[in-house]
Length: 109
Length: 109
DNA sequence: TACCTATATGACCACATAATCATATAGTCA
DNA sequence: TGACTATATGATTATGTGGTCATATAGGTA
Image (cartoon, rainbow over all chains, first blue to last red; front, side, top):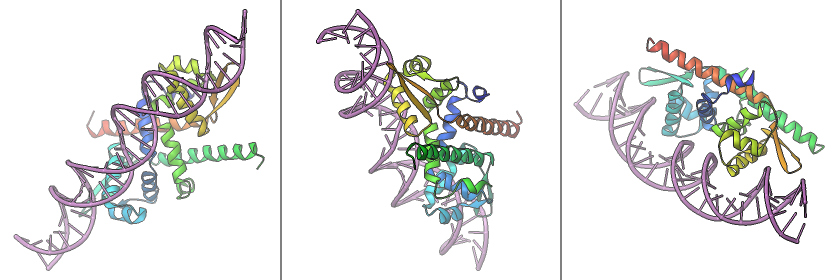
């Protein structure tokens, strides 16, 4: 049942988590982590963003437990905390595709 | 596979949709719509927010095709465009619960 | 017509936050 | 120790946007 998950009590925390995922660079970081753990430097190279920026977003993702961190030697290795986040993206993509399809039908595309 | 859904091409639109869902009042509105269509006035009463604010969020939700609108007589009836959004909330709640559980275990709660 | 209700919208403010820069911290190795 | 690399963080700026207010629009009804 839909209302079981979304209730006035957890509404704020659910919204917060959505907001965390609402930043392209953070999604890009998570996408990179889908293949396994990565260092900050690797993520900087992969995303094309700056080191402080990537580091800051990782801190945010860590604070909200979307990623895990493990320090080994001189580096910090980040990994996805809960693979279920990718299910979220799947559903969102499904949403978008259906939206576009309806739009296409509506305009007789 | 995770990467099928989340790719550099749709990254921006996926993030946008997450951002739309990242506002408590908008989630509350969707929650109200879970039971069926509602007028703006009904949503204003149910949420305790102001009419212009609710109307504005509905406009946003409509622009991103998360809700549908139907005008009948003097009123505008809004309804959920794609019930899959509630699946999103379910998964997010699952995420949060697992996070809290891990936290609890980590601190020996 | 006038009046009421319902909804939308433009202007404005306040706040959150993403990005940048410079710098601090911390680990490795000579 | 010093030099180098990797990461984190404080200060600052710029931008987006949620909320409020006043007002406009539109339909219903007398």
